[in-house]
Length: 213
View 1 (cartoon, rainbow, N blue to C red):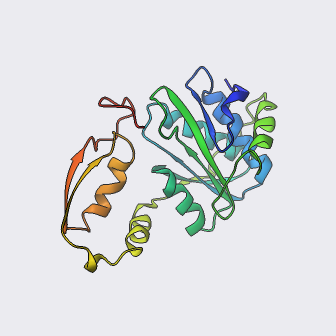
View 2 (cartoon, rainbow, N blue to C red; view 1 turned 135 degrees about the vertical axis):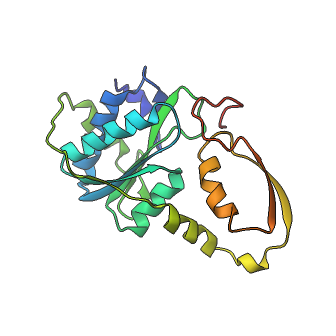
């Protein structure tokens, strides 16, 4: 399923599977490669319950069109941007519905230089190409490799501050069972001067405590 309305001004968003499902994700993966012709690209996903199968479908679509995919796994959206920029990739797709309710799925799409793709920069072309995909091409197996971007990302985040200049501080952080619950601990463990009260740090796409917004 691929409802044209899931293509918004700056990303792809819709209810799973009524508006967008694995078949649609596969088509978007193929359309992305047709539009931007990446040789090497990254695909990541968030913790939503539909994200593993949606990301797998995107990867199949991308490899079926000839791209080499680095599967960066379970990450935050900013980590996909970092992966594309720091590794010199030709683009990437992040399977995420950001702050939307749990029944949603979606994608953030970037091109070479980690530049976001929106309606004015190719997203509507991806939409048109995806809607034209009517078959499963096949034959792209073996062009996927896993890559762990976490250590380099944490180093980069901490490079923006002078850790030695930080003063003791008590903070309450609500991760809303989203990806912040996975992303923050590796950073916080290197900031021992912070006394952190954590709320809902277990990534859980059913959002048992409150919506991620």
